[in-house]
Amino acid sequence: MVSDRHGVPLACLATPGQKNESLYVGPLLDAVRVPQSTGPPRRRPQLLIADKGYDHPTVRRALRARHIRALIPRREDPRLHRVGRPAFFDVHLYRGRNVVERLVGRLKERRRVATRFEKFAVSYETLVKLAFVERYLESPFPYTA
Image (cartoon, rainbow, N blue to C red):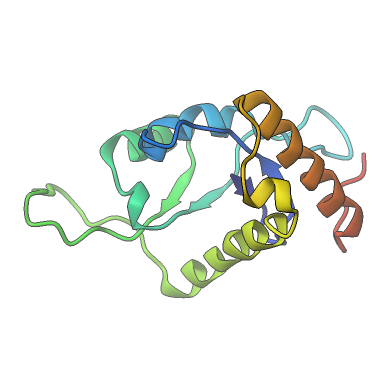
């Protein structure tokens, strides 16, 4: 799930439970569309804040290809031999990651989103997007064209 800094959801993608989420960062970022007052919608955020689970070369490559700055803490894994300069990391900006965690908590207030009863991913994504609409309607920062 991708949200803006105010906790307004921008895109979601249902993935298989046994697959690593870092494989789906590219398709998820391609689904982001932020309406602008004039011109086409924005498709590229300036900064992506993620947790250590997304510290993977494919994720960083996908973000670099889209010219998106990554704020992802490094895993302390001795098997990973990092070469080159250390990645950008700002502790104060990283504190904003809890906005997404709070958004997920608010979306899970809907019982059908919290406990996935749907057999098909398309049905589940539809319910999540319905919860998105409810979140848009109660948001203090609505996106208007």
